[in-house]
Image (cartoon, rainbow, N blue to C red):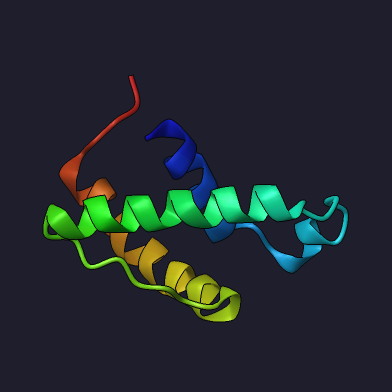
Amino acid sequence: MRNALLAASTILMASPLWAQDAPPLTEAERQQAIQEIQDLRSRMTAQGADPAYLPGDAFAAYLVAEMPVWAKAVKESGARLD
């Protein structure tokens, strides 16, 4: 599970800026990452989640739009890091 989460996080958080310095994946690494993502997607779907793919620009726009919403919710809740 941890590897699948790491693979998904890497894909979600990778940006073209970071990717330009990264060595290319071998075919075996690429196939392993794809399999782990497919396994993760299957488990998420089985639990009722709706995993969706967003291209990099769309995902970045989504995060920019969501951050103020959640920042407000956290501030209003009074949540604190202890």
